[in-house]
Image 1 (cartoon, rainbow, N blue to C red):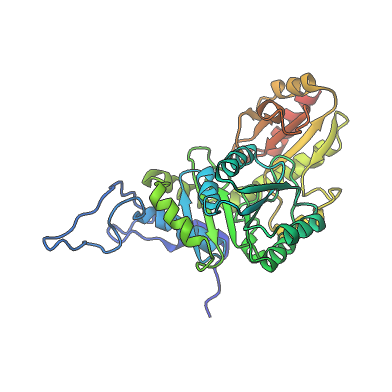
Image 2: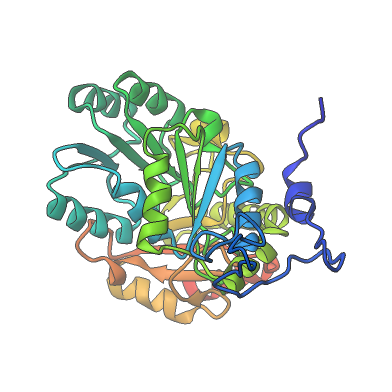
Length: 379
C-alpha cells in the first residue's frame, strides 16, 4: 500500500500537478466559459460543457482539498457564505437545525433570516456544553447540526466526536465550520463529522486576495450531498478560474504558514495572559483554558492564528488600544499572512460581545515586532 503523503507534500506539489500541454508545474488558467463540439456535435472532451461545473483548475482545487480532509468529495464556492447557504438550503420546511450560538455573525444573521423565511426551526445552542447539546439533539431530532470550532470570536471548542455520535443516533447531519483551524490543523471528518466547511478566503488562501468557500464530505452517498451539488450548479454558485488559481497558489504554503501563525499566536496569547492591562485571553492553546485538552485532541500542529482578549477598562479604552496599533491592521478577516485587529463590538453590538473585546488574527511577522506593537498599544 502506498503511504499517504504528508500535507506539506500534498499542498506544495499541488497534488502532483503537471500541465500536460506545456510541462509546467504551475496550474494553467483556462478562462473559457464554454467548450466546443465537433461536426457531429460530440464534445471534444466529454466532461467539459460549460464552466458552471466544468473547470479543470477548480477541479484541481477540489481534489487537493478533498485529499487534505480525507474526504470523498469536495466542492469550491465563490464565498464561504455561499457554501453555507448551499448546505442550509437542503433543509426542508418543518425540519429543525441546531446551530452553535455566538459564532461568526454573518452565519448567524443569514441563518436566522433564512430559517424564518423557510419555516425551518432554528435552535441556537452553546455546543461547547457537550451534555446539554447531546440531550438537545436526542429530544429535537434535527436534520442538521451546524457547529464552528474553534468559534469566532469566542474560541470555544466543541467536542466533534461526541456530537458526531449523537447526530448519528438520530440520523442527522453534523457539519463543522473549521475555518479558524483549517485542514493543516484539524480534520473534522476524521472525528466523525459528515461535512466540513471552510471560508477559503481565510487561512486556505492566506493572502487576503481572493474570496472562496469549501464544503467537503465524508461519503458521497451522504443524504444531502447530491442536493448540494445540484444547488451549486443550478444557483450558479461557482468560482472563477483566476480565483481558483489564487486559491491553489495560497494553499501551496498552507502548512508552513499555519505553523508560523500558530507559533506567533501562542506567543501573543502567553504575553497577553500575563499583561496587567488585560482581563482575559481566549485561546485554546493556553493550558489555563477549560477546553485545552479537548482542543489538543482535535487540533494538530498548533491552535491556529485566531485569538481574542478583553482589555481592562471601558469601550473607549479598547478603541484607544486599537488606535495605537501600527503592525496589527484595523481590518475584518483572519488567516492572512498579515496580522489584523478588530474591535468586535463595533461590528456586532447586539450579540453579547463585550465592549472591550479585541479579536486578533496573528500573521507571520517576526514575533518580537508583534509583541512590541502590542506593548506600545497597551501602555
